[in-house]
View 1: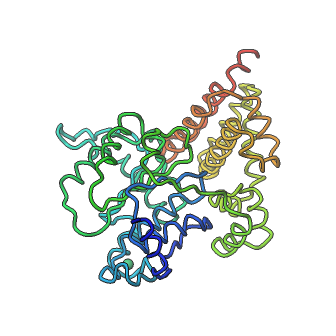
View 2 (view 1 turned 90 degrees about the vertical axis):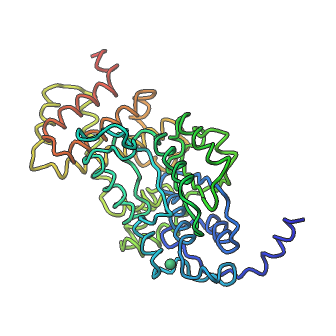
View 3 (view 1 turned 120 degrees about the vertical axis):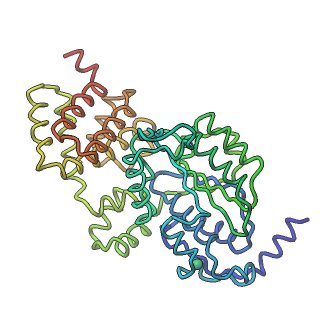
Length: 405
Ligand SMILES: [Zn+2]
């Protein structure tokens, strides 16, 4: 009966503009969240599922900003228009992701306490200056682009310390009227302990807290978490939307937008990457390097170390590593489910590579690449980074071939 009344009442609610200005496409998701914002009937916990680059975090942050906007708090439920207003204090803070009512949790490295730290300090406060810098950079990139990855090198799981400090915070701070939104990015990286701690929070949700979990790996989520969330599925973005948004937002011409769209497989993030670079040229460099590593001629590998490790080339080496990381993720995805990358038939190398390296340690290879990228930021000597990485990749990916040789 109550539901029926709700249904009838929905007709009276003006379908006025809340704005998901960073989210690309995903009309159905917009509809569900717009309705929730307009009616004030917000779930305790949402789970956004969909592929990388489909806009889960962009939607979460846009939604959070709508809820946090204070412009018409007094008119709530009557005529909420044009949220977020972009002119109240709340909007200014949420735009910079510094709003106290907005918390971002994502896989982070375990704190390496600075030497001067003392016992008794909250573990979360124990990050070293270098680690903090890395995480600040990740957040700054997110402020600029809601599609940027919340990925820090060495961050393999969502730490239980962060869940605990969240629980403590909710216990200590009293509810002051507004929404509090917690985005948990890559929720599949909640390991058992942290997941259980989080479940306790979900079972007794603090007042006016909205959890938004995101994941591209549904199969790795605990069923107990899944069953307690309202699930929203993000589809691949259709080509027409990608193409026109690329032309508007990235300001590329129609031909370039078309080519990038074809390669993007429904992902905005990939579409932008392809639109900004010269995909085939960049990928060719990665493929060539992999081929040389597979052949494993030490003379040739040393030559590559000399080439890529030259200090003057450190910028393009960083670019190579980024491309390599993307490419490796594609291979990994193809390996896990060839059907999922049907539009990648343009890259026969990827398919060959995936079949050759089947069952090998992609995660290890990716970790090695991430570590090398971190080393570049730490200003480790480039030739040393290149040497370590190339030999490590050879060992991780091609050890069987190496043994047979
Ligand atoms: Zn506002």
